[in-house]
Image 1 (spheres, rainbow, N blue to C red):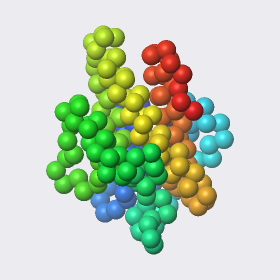
Image 2: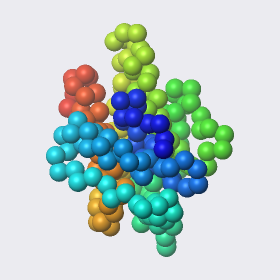
Image 3: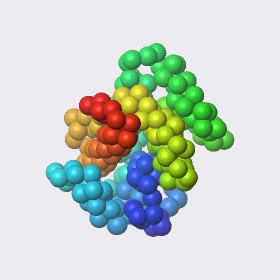
Image 4: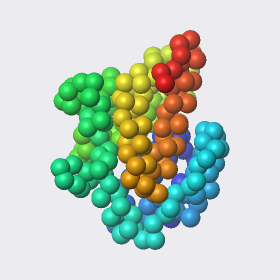
Length: 207
């Protein structure tokens, strides 16, 4: 079992683990016997009153098969890809991918060696938001927090919320009982984070 507890993690890191591709190795978090209770607590914290929990798979093979069939394989494309660019039509895909990378580089970050995902993949976006969350916690004063908070607000608004609600809706249409509920909570967390940033900057959050 992975030694992960909700109280030890910011929620972006929790979602990063929940949406990691299952496979050989440690038991994936979606199959951890504690995950149902953790997610119930997250739903309560986020005010998602109708959260029904996840339908955990019976085996790692089933979890991996579900992940692949939803997110990686399909004709002409997977049913629900985990990259922003297939959903966000505001800019050409190459520009969206490049802008994600520019956000990362503005904070001195590069994709890790061996990372085969594009910059706009959900794993990279969640890791970046987790990093900004840690920076905010470590900032010594309000003046230091403001540029970090501004970047977090802009990234959520321009990128994460430009596609994650659409992916969530797609999973709901497909009736997926494993990753669909996780996306519902992720979207709720993003909207709450954006709303908090908006209040701190004195501007309303985008709906």
